[in-house]
Image 1 (tube, rainbow, N blue to C red):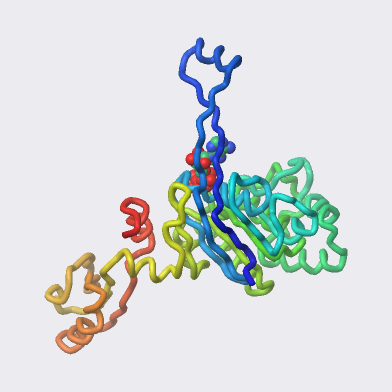
Image 2: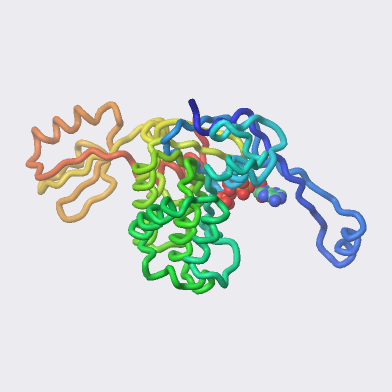
Length: 322
Ligand SMILES: Nc1ncnc2c1ncn2[C@@H]1O[C@H](COP(=O)(O)OP(=O)(O)OP(=O)(O)O)[C@@H](O)[C@H]1O
């Protein structure tokens, strides 16, 4: 059983174009010209119930387009999609009550004059949430998202971080089983982003929800997503464990050691400060080198690390996957 099933999905947009200048502007009023933009080209993947998958790729790769299709906002040009056994773009009400699509760039829609509590009440009516369930879910969300001080405030008076917390509460008040989270931490400071991450983790643990998450912040991906789907120019470039991507792209690991001796004979020194060293060592030599280091030097502390995820992903974007 898969919660999300995507087969040979393609999507092209007709984007209006016109040359610069006044004359071209007038001409475009009479006859518009369009260019086809292939946003997705033969994309396939599946997500199991309860799985949290990171969906990453450079700007314009096709992530938001995919999420819009999966949540029923867009109709694709070709392909087959099933989310919880339904075709999303049929937009059947029972289906829409089981999923949520939250965008960090616009977390709360609707009337900005309403208070947070009124907006949550509105969601309760819209999604037909029984009052007792509403009350208990609200209590949980209030605690996890620190909503207490916000409930009487108008939506338009919320800061970016507060809007995201409220946006998540509005999307989750009906306890959806599948979450599409598009850049949930965009623009947030370090502690606000970490609160959101912690919240997503708790929600998944408590409810067993399935999550597809896009983010340009590798901290989100590294801490939440054991699995990564990497998309570029509308094609899936990689789909598998986060760890394997590092192994595939970087033939090295890092040995971080604390010693008063000089370990530079054991590997390439990439960092050095105050008795702390970081050595770059070929993956298949890590065990041997570690053993020799411990024998030859007076080592206070030693840890073997994967290269930073930012570097691995940057390399994947720039050079592609071999
Ligand atoms: N409404 C639209 N009309 C025309 N082209 C569009 C439209 N929406 C998206 N595109 C194009 O489709 C491609 C994929 O866009 P999409 O927004 O899915 O990328 P993304 O991976 O979410 O990017 P980002 O990380 O910048 O948010 C881009 O080339 C984009 O310009």
